[in-house]
Structure formats: structure tokens, C-alpha cells
Length: 217
Length: 217
Image (cartoon, rainbow over the protein chains, first blue to last red):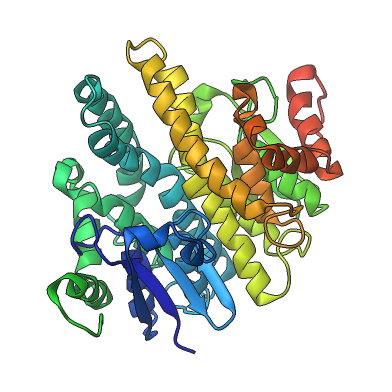
């Protein structure tokens, strides 16, 4: 059964890969799983029909027969557990890959999102410039630890996994800040992920929403 | 094989259930799984021996034979996937319970942790009082949505699951603020979870670290 995901009709970044449907599209492409996309407006996201799918009124959602999921990490996990491209068969390697998914979402991404919150929700406040310094220090703290752990490895734990996918997508949000370049192995890690054919297909599909490809793929 | 987890030797809350080993202890108790606890000092957490277990120098970690995991969400998931007490057998119900784990960690917990960051890391800043109002509004936004979805239900999706466990533990951090009481169904939900025998055993075990029970259980 072909699953259907939701994505922004009007994305804040105009399809530059930052909206969270990108993670799901990327996982689906890594898994060679065809999918349908339903675009939703900001207004429709807050209405009951969409909230029945996503209690927090966001995207993406995932529908597959009677199953409805929300939360990009959970959807990526759902896709990944059926694909050894994304989660290895070996039980211990699998548990470690899942650990990196959670680390990306709960330890690495929150300070990175603080940067967005400070800029877009508190950008007009007198304290923001001074706070950005503090937030960037917190991000560097995580990046430094991550950089040490990654070292010279290609991926976080053996072969590419859903853990790398979610981690890279969290890190991509830092690109405009230039901070990734302070950690050359992390910048190279992100670049390696962006070079994957599945990433490129997902990126092109998301961008096509804003450049007029009607198939969304 | 009995797993070993790590916990704070000196916890900021003196064992009042907020440190993240609490989630893991609670999951282990729900799963009726005996465990060992190794206490680590703040100093030791930042040293190479601990960082080999946890790249971000935090607690908890989880060791079981050759398997080493970190990140409380990942550890809870690892425990839960082997226990129908925590993740249902039915594939769709299981996927939805996992979704709530991710929602708790990536959507509900981050604004709640911002409250801690503002108080403890920026408490001396001139902007903090004004920012606390903004942060609390963001938390209320999430709590309102969660309250609507929970409605009159006992748990988030059918029977108690690891999704409820992680969600409740994220919400517990709000208790001192009184904000939970603005959403009576959420306050009751948290109270129901705290009344579970497994929660009580985990809480007592964590508290015992600071009151002198040498077995830590």
C-alpha cells in the first residue's frame, strides 16, 4: 500500500530541504518506497480534519491504510524498521542506530531549534543579539562532542542508518550560520549525506512543490 | 543478563524523580527487569571512560553485555520493545505508542526544558523575567493541544505504553510551575502515572541514592 504523507503547501524555506517532511521523503527514498504527498496550508493544519491526524497541528503526517502517524522521528522509524538500508539487522547495531535517532532529536536538535526561535519568534526583542551568543555556545558544546565521537568515521555507527539521516537533517539547519564549518568532519559528514542519491531525490521532490512539478515526486 | 545503568551521584534535584535515569528505572520496573546502577560524579561524566559510553557526557547510559546505549528515550525504547507492558503487540498500536515517545521528546519536552534553561542558565540575565512569559506561552500551546487529544482517555492511545511513560516524565518537570493544573485532564493523567506501582518503585530507588540505601534498589 502506497503511504501518503503531508507537507507544507507554502513552506517557510520554499522547499530548501528544512521542513520536516524532508526527513520522511529521504527515508522513503532510501527505502525505495513510493509515496503520495498531500499538501496542506497553514490554515488547514490548524483545523480539526488535520488535527485528527496530527494533534499538534503540524506536518508531516503519514497515512498507510488505517495507520496514522505523526512526528517526523516516529515516521522515519516506522519506515526504517522495515528496511535494512536504514536499520541494520544485527540487534545491537540496530539498537545503536536507534540511539542516534533519539540523540539527534532530543540532544542535538533542541539547541539548534533555539537559534530559529530566537531569530524568528524573538527577533524583535532587545535581548536577542546577546542571547544568540549563548545559544551558539550551547550548540557548539553539542557539535564539539559529536565531532569527537564521529572522528574520521564515515557514519556514526558503521554503515549509514536512520540515525545518520535524522542527525544530518538536524545539522543541515545550521548551514546558513556557518557553524558547521567550525567542525570540518561534521561538515564533511553532512556533505556525504547530501551526496546520497536518495537525499537528492527527496530534495528535488520537495523543491518541485514550489517550482511547479505537479507529481510532487 | 542484568543490565547496568548510570545515574547521578549528586543529582540537581536530590532524587526527586527529574533526572533522566528516572525514565529508565521506571521502564525497567514496568518490565519487571532487575538492574544495577552505577553512580557517576559530574566530574567523571566528562572524562573519557564515561564519554566512551555517552558521547555527550551525560546520564543515563545502559550496558548489557557488549551493548552500550545512551539517551533516555533510546534506552526506554530498547527495554520497551521486549515488553508488551510497554509496547503493544499489534503493529499499528505499537507504531502509535512509539509516535508518542517521539512526540514527548521532540515536541513537548523542548519548550519545557527551555524553562529550565532560562531559570538556571540565564537566571541572572535582565531579560529572563520577560522571556519566561514567552516560554510559558509556548508550553501552554503544546499542553493545550495535548489536553485536547487526551480528552477523557486514561492514556494517550489505549493501554499504558512507553509513550505515556516518556510523556509523563516530560510533563513532571512542570509540576513546580503549577502550569499542569491549568489542564485538569493532564494533571490527572500525570497523577495516574505516578500512582503506578512501577513508578513508585523507580521513584523510591532514585530517592534512595540520596537517603542512604546502599543497594540503590
